[in-house]
Image (cartoon, rainbow, N blue to C red; front, side, top):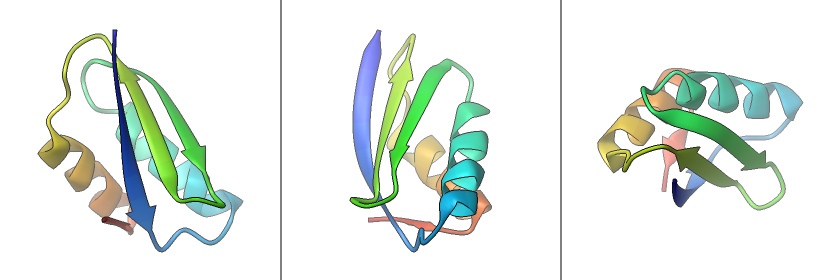
Length: 67
């Protein structure tokens, strides 16, 4: 298992958390996504290393930015 933490900018509510969780969860290999609204931290647990570019693309698709 691999775990990486990213900071997402622009999330303000529970819907934001849901959007980011849904998009990042669709990345192949992702096993779990934990989003902390207060800190903006997103922890991704996966069965392999996930490219930061893939996480960035998913976050952008959800409407937010990876810092």
